[in-house]
Image (cartoon, rainbow, N blue to C red; front, side):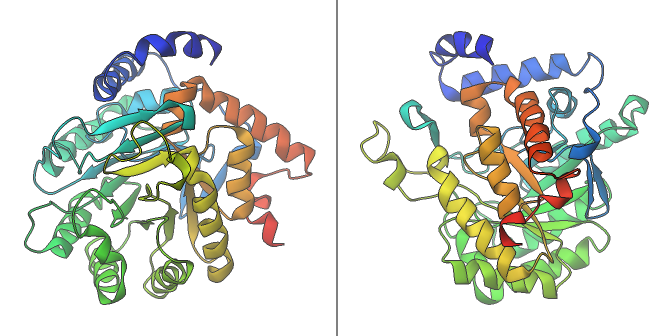
Length: 351
């Protein structure tokens, strides 16, 4: 991490998307060198019928097209989530569309589900699964979305679920991106119910999670949780980026359209996580994401009710060494608090 902090000023001279492409290339090269190190047994758990070596995952948005799965696992993640993938290829919004807010350790992005389409990723993931060296690969989730110009967005989610049901270890229904006009409207009322019912029917044997926005009022989030429990949805991811600008007020890029990620999202996403865990009484698997850049923040997510924790923006500011640091420090914290397994720490603030 100290080496990365030395190199980061040079990397930050590049536009964010170019730096991101270079990072993906580096991880693709890294994937050729061995397997990830074995994790401490105390960090492992079984969740949604899946075995996670550790609770840390790469959030969706980083490896949209599934190009660097092995490399992401190689730096120590217990799982990775590719996507968001739409049925048809989509260029996304015009550039520039990603902005670094360095003093706030944050990003603003309005990418708009840019990806090469589900069929491209489907072929790549199929080849990955068929290769003998990947027989023991760690968990791979697939995040599905709807095309911006789709006439029936719910049908897009149903199609994505059907396409990846047999290849993904779990599916994420992303109805919370702020960068596709009208998409967040699907989080309310009958729309969210129809989506989860049709996605479950399309992928009856695959764990399914729904990713929600931190800008929902708590009652809305808890209502989605209740619908999830009632319709055999396995969990929620809390949360996506926020449209709130309070945490970045005065920043050079605060007026740019898009969602804010990173440190300004930590408190609001963790508060929502805590509320949903309490309302659902532990019946859902919850993935906490938003503003995690150190072990104390990751531990706070777990104690609030998250079974797993995803990262993205924190890696941009801390570097790939953050993953090993989080695991090492979390293991020590579990021991200090008398937890011999991570499962016993989940939701500890409620007990």
